[in-house]
Amino acid sequence: MIYDDFINLKYEPKKDDLIALFYIEPNKKKGISIRRAAGAVAAESSVGTWADNPMIKKKHVWRISAKVYKITKEGYVYIAYPLDNFEPGNMPQIYSAIAGNIFGMKAVNNIRLVDVKWPKKLLKSFKGPNLGLRGVQRTMGIRNRPIIACVPKPKVGLTAKEQANVAYNVWYGGVDLVKDDENLTNQRFDKFKERVDLYMKARDKVEKEVGGRKAALINVTSPANEIEKRIKYVAEHSNPFVMIDIITTGWSALQYAREIVGDYGLGIHAHRAMHAAFTRSKRHGISMLMIAETARIIGVDNIHVGTIVGKLEGGKTEVTTITEHVREVKPKGNKKYPCLSDDFTGVKPATPVSSGGLHPGLLPYIVDVFGNDLIIQVGGGIHGHPKGSMAGAMAVIQALEAIKNNTSLEEYAKSHEELKEALKKWGRKRTG
Ligand code: CAP
Ligand code: MG
Image (cartoon, rainbow, N blue to C red; front, side, top):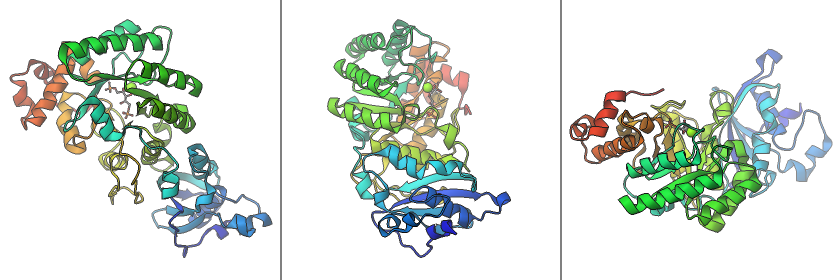
């Protein structure tokens, strides 16, 4: 049975092997065992196929066959891939192998790519973050506190002028970064170039008025050739960041964008819209952990990781494990969340972004869990403030001050009107 040839429980992975950790549920109705399913996955993702073929066993071909070397009773399967399966510096190719046809195989009912241990040689073939966590903080002149971002709402529909006006108000209220929403690019009502021009005008004005560094996370999501033009436009207008929806544009576009931002010294803010289509099920698809570390390796500087207490899916164990893999050199891992040990030496740390349903009352929890090396993004929790966006921004900054001073929000609110109003409206309620 050919699939069985891909199982070698005595195999000891080599230093240069890529290790993939899968969770597999075999198709029991078809009488398929986990061993057979694991063998099928290893075959299909490396040199094999459903039919026997003597060429597969030629020494130089078989040399790079994937090897299933561990299967646990919980359904976790460890597969080692010799390095030569992969083209260095080509993330789409790597995904076509380890995250390709296998998801549709009839031999499995469910299969999830949980994590990868990346060999040094592959890690080195990608650029990694251009600015990285510390570079982002340096750019903003901020250390020892989270950076605060705000996405203007409504998500889309405002004119460029209205958008820049909202940006001005929240910058003025104390926010550091204004973020475009994931579905705002270059629509009829808000043209990209006009938005950039007006943002920058508002930024210059507000920097003069209140001091400090302000910047925008400008969404350049579009076809790759257009991404290039838009990054250049942002750079020429002296804004240090662009935002890219990394899932809808794909790894190829992200790699291309990473090349371009490198030429201009910009950072990439990664939005992950659409990730939940394949990360949400715990039994099938690709984990968000995998997506986050891949994005870091290619070279995003900030990436959304979740909030635990906000409007979008993601529990504490998962979100904190992802955060570690985004930010640490050697993530410690978490016994409650299956993952592989990694060594990201040489790849700059990226900044985790906590976003989605946050408001001032939730900030103590967020800072407690994530610490200061973080971007906190608040949209609805600013614009929904009873006194409007500027007051909403002030309430967020006041919450941050209370945390810094080790004072409860409620206590601080006694002498801070904006925070008081926000707490009256939302309290400390989770938004999920
Ligand atoms: C947040 C947000 C982000 C989500 C994405 C939104 O707005 O801009 O897209 O955070 O999810 O449009 O919903 P609010 P994630 O602050 O108004 O919730 O960060 O989990 O990838
Ligand atoms: Mg959004």
